[in-house]
Image (cartoon, rainbow over all chains, first blue to last red; front, side, top):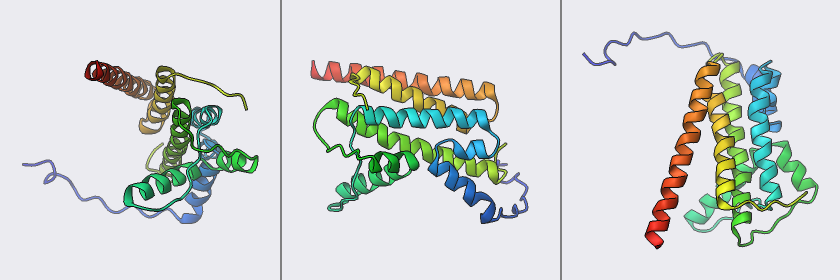
Length: 142
Length: 61
């Protein structure tokens, strides 16, 4: 008998209202680790938030470039729009850097290249933080 | 903002460390599992880093 056949159907969980999880996800987006801190998960918030911020700061210090939402062929669109979305996902640190005039052009060199990846990586890490905060507030996780 | 110049190895290890911390924290439920998974991820990053590094060295001569 396969494992699927032995599964007992579980009743669907009642949905968590959007008014409960949306503020948490927005805080988690705006301030890396902020969603966890808001949910009283201070230690986890400090760990994931500091890892995200350190990644972002190293990206800036390595003079990485922010992506622009350029379109063209499929690959160009995928890279630039995807990179732009990942940059936006860092939240306030991204906007702060932009407002303070950080505007590094995309130049050749492995340090700049790694910096760009660190900036994108910070955004991707923050997406993981947002998903984790969402899972906590919806009761999927402790 | 000071400028830092990390070489390939330093940048890769730093990125692997930061990603491993977040993956360990967000994917597991107990502190022990988080440590184990974080270390496992870091080990996988290092194995890939050195494996691909040697592959490229051997490929390029």
